[in-house]
Length: 235
Image 1 (cartoon, rainbow, N blue to C red):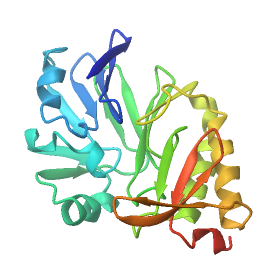
Image 2: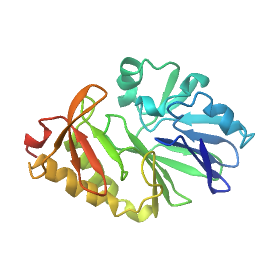
Image 3: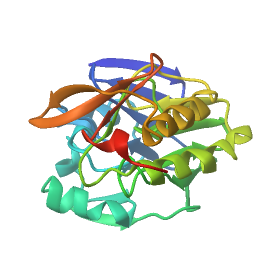
């Protein structure tokens, strides 16, 4: 586990394949996601702060919920409930957060931005005062999973457009995978690349991930892992 201070009140925990974050305010602390193989994210966080600790999920894929059992409740977008409880057999009670909701840690307001596409309930967290966006999986320069019934490229692209319209509100993006941080210019790069896939202008390479036959569309700055026939779709 690589633990890195972004600043005195922001810490990144990196397992090597996925990272989660601890944000501190004056009144409480918030974990953004809880790891993949990690089962003690709560203990790791409490080594860094004595503030009351809460948990928020950017989405419910299994590599983001490893320590959820340590929390009796957590914040999550309701559209992610099926992925969490049915898809990954998650436990605990979720507290719904919606587009525009603000969680204030005490002098540190965090705004929820709904970004459906990678999963139905994917969200990003806008750290207003620090001008940072914690993006989860949709904005990254690694591998973006877009195969399976939970993923939808058209919705993903609309989310990118909404985020692009707000990029004057943040200077850096802190993803769960890949390089961290990345610049705001990545948003439209991903939008253009995903459009090429939908328009049939990108040739995917056949591959297999977790027993699923997929097409990999590698654009150099990021790759999309899609359903085998996704390149034949139309916008």
